[in-house]
Image 1: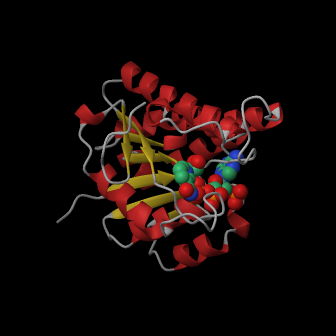
Image 2: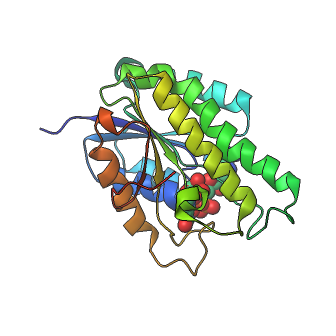
Length: 239
Ligand code: NDP
């Protein structure tokens, strides 16, 4: 029999997060905690929960709010099975791209502030709030959903500056978390350019393709992978 694993996904009500929830629930060994800003309005998640036989928990979680994240952590820790087994995979997926194709010399700094609060401080505060439950688990893994747009080594060009800068900072968060705690595995993961609200309709890949790759790569991680940056094919991305 396969091992049972608990996953926490932020930004789970649409796009990559929702597809992660759908695909993870296809395996009866997975329990999923779906974090989203408004569970009462998350019709897709509610529909999945109704058929999941208690394997899907919806939690209000706004990663840009410390109060929301702290409250969510308390709520999750009260779920008896999670309190006992912890969270195997914490996936910091929630993210925004408010500045579009902005440039360093032209960007609106409010977009830089927004991306930092959601794309960098968000994953940092979620990790701080939930790390105790992660350390209780078998897999002890944190996945920060990043982007090759934040990979200087991939030479991503001038555009998409505020977003790219936030993802480069997120990658350093991955590195710092991995260096600080050797008992957990922390990685950055680029999901590929996928057809979502954020990725847009010109994206070459259906969201299901990227999510299959994320799950396969994450399931194959070992502690020696901590502090690395992967793409959805399981290849190393340069920082
Ligand atoms: P979408 O825009 O489709 O979905 C974004 C999700 O993040 C939504 O569920 C949204 O919730 C949630 N979110 C935004 N802000 C917050 C917040 N403050 N608190 C909680 N949830 C929030 O984007 P994708 O699914 O495409 O992106 C998911 C991740 O993948 C992001 O980190 C993105 O940067 C990354 N990525 C995506 C790529 C792509 O091509 N799609 C490529 C590379 C990386 P709500 O509905 O409430 O707004």
